[in-house]
Image 1 (cartoon, rainbow, N blue to C red):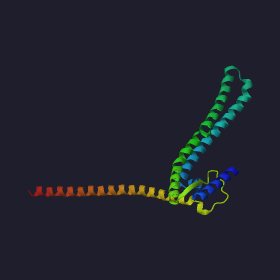
Image 2 (cartoon, rainbow, N blue to C red):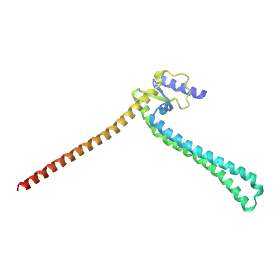
Image 3 (cartoon, one colour):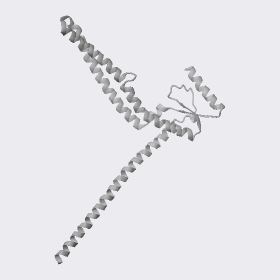
Image 4 (tube, rainbow, N blue to C red):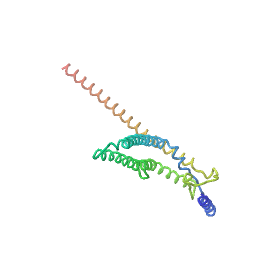
Length: 216
């Protein structure tokens, strides 16, 4: 902790010497405020809860079978004993494999969470670069990356600026998507109008031809 505080102090000193502007951004805070991320995280947490529930049921089933085996193994002999023992051992191995595959350091949960956060982290990184360029920042620190900041003047905190930029970008994307849908609807209406007009013209022409035939 002391080494980290000294490192941060050193960065500020270097920035002061070379007249570099320093900014601080709390990326975890920004991430938590993105509606799309919160929705995706909610779906992931729901999946994790389901896996945890399945694992608890599997463990409860294992405990029942193991306890029953321990109580009855004195009455078991030969192949029957081996079969019951193998059943308990296989179930225990299955539980260990499930825990490792889903909840281990390289398990599905961590992989899914990494895949979930990466696109949003890329958006945040691009927004930070834009804010840094706009404000001539030479150094940007991530407040959420285990950096101990005892005091921070508000003028050095660009978290809200990054969040505001991301909000504007999201709004632009949503408007563009909505505009495309509206344009498509308008085109369809125009096409339907043209088709209807053509139908009326053809009907009028048929009627005129019919009247001419009767006169003859």
